[in-house]
Each structure stands twice: as structure tokens, then as C-alpha cells.
Amino acid sequence: MNGVRKPVNGLSRRTTGRPRPWRLEFGAAVLLLAQAGPAAAEPEVFVVDPASSRVRIHLGRAGLLSFMGHEHEIDAPIAEGRVEVDPADPARSLVDLRWQTALLAIVPGTEPEKDVPEVEERMRGPEVLDVAQHERIRFWSFEIEVEEADPAAGRWRLRLRGGLELKGSRHTVEIPVEVHRQGGELVATGEANLRLRDLGVEPPSVASVVKVSNDFRVTFDVRSRRAQAVVESR
Image (cartoon, rainbow, N blue to C red; front, top):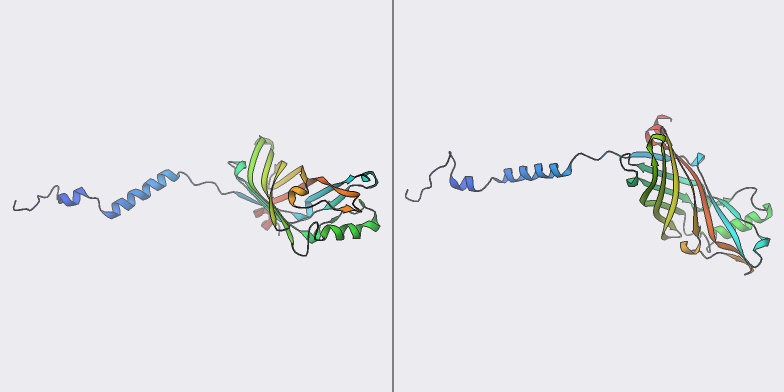
């Protein structure tokens, strides 16, 4: 009457027609929580043990006089590494490995002793590793494909696609890996075939006749322990 609205259940029609701001915020929060679902499980973190791990680079020879040469075998000790394992979905796991270029060296006994200093100097020089300008090499995974899995036996066959940082440039590489888990330890082994030119390195030659082959392979046995186990063992 006289322009005054009648209350409805003790509230004015203006109140019942427009929800209060706090009700909107509360409703939105409930909706977001419902959509989020249960929280994802925390990944297990493993730390690479450089002392018990091994990475070897095998370089062959090419050219007219390749029969006079032999394969170079280079030790590439891992400086540090970390693996994050998603127990619910191994494909969402992560790998991050790093090397110090100055520590790459000829495996003792695989090269005539008199040739080792010259070979290592050339390897560390600007045409190959360029140690003076680039102190590290890094590999990190950005995609993991599970090709075969036997969780009960603690074994997986994976294919890692990731980035390889070498001489300041980043390249995509693919690495097949066999993983065996035993308690708080992970062992990853495998072999990958790569090409020097794909990584921005021109195969060095000797007198333009005998040269290092463009194709090379990397073999590895990388061992890591669960981060908590590493702390407890100190």
C-alpha cells in the first residue's frame, strides 16, 4: 500500500530476489572444490647416486682409413640428478640429469696411453664440447611413454623424450629405458643411438681422412635412491 512492498517470510522482495554477495562466494567455492576432486598423490623423489651410476659414450670411426682407427670410449660421470616418480601414473614422472663437461674423459685402457691427452684436448675444445664456454650438459624429460609395465615385479620399459642442452643449444632426443625398482632404489639401464650433427657437433677428422663417425651410441646404468632414504642414511 502507498508504494510500500509487503514482507515475504520476514524479508523484503528485494532481498529474496537477489542473493547476498557472501552466498555467491560460498557457492562458487563449493563448486570449485567439487570439480577439483581428490588431491593428487605427491610424487616420490629419488636422488641419483653418481658414484654407483655409469654413462658411457661410444664413438666410432669413419672415412677411407677408418680401419686404422678404433672406437673412442668416453666416461660421462653424472654430476647430479633427480627423478620424480608418480606412483599412480608413471607417464607423468620426471627425470633431470646434469653433467660437468670438463669431467668427460677417455675410459682408461680403451685408448693408447700416448694418444689420450691429444684426444681429450680435442674433445674439450671449441669444435666438440667447448668446455671453456659451456660448463654443463643437461637432460630433462618432457614426455614418458610406458611401453611395458609389470608393477608387481617392479619393472617398466619406458621411452623418454626430452631436451638435451649441449653447447648452449637445446635438442630433442629419445631414450629407451629399462627401469627396475627394488624398495627405495631405482635402476635405469639402456642404450640410445644418436648423431653428432643432430646435436650441433661436426664430427672431427684427422688429416681430413680419418674422422669420428657421425653416429654414436650412449649406454647407461643410472642408480638412484629415494630422497628420504638418502637423508636417513647420512
